[in-house]
Image: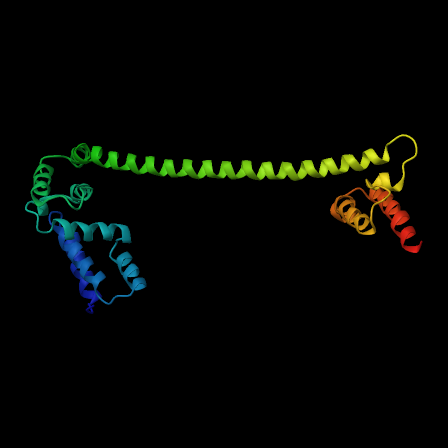
Length: 237
């Protein structure tokens, strides 16, 4: 990058701002030269403000200079028409661009805009519609995948919930039986059950009924007493 005298650049750009036709190219040239120099970003923005431009407007001037400087007839066009010509795709061939510049001389900026849109909008709209359709398909696929995952999680949740409800129902059925109920019946065991099976059964019930597992404290207390009456008595016998 080369250094540049901002004072001289300011003076020159002010002179061209007072000229209507062709000034946009000289202003674009000066802006491009300053931008390409060793001016820091903060200094570049501050300098733009000092000569009456914001970064967006400066960018437009530089684009006009870069694209139309060598196009015949472009220097005679107003800034508004040149700005409309910027909407023409950058890969447009030189002959087509020259034709638009020639038309611009006899059209208003608004008519020129309509002419450009009529020429390029269908192509751009088709491309945009294709992109939108692809994006929508991708969104729909993601939604279907999420819906499937939610259904699977719901089924898994319901299975666990049903298992817990079944276990709780069995426990209440033991307690609510009419007549006498033995500790073995309460725990769902037979008289010949081994000590190891008694312990395993109690652990299973505790996992469902213990208050720390969000179980029923009263029911757990009944089961604990039933377990103690069997296991402890057998152990001390």
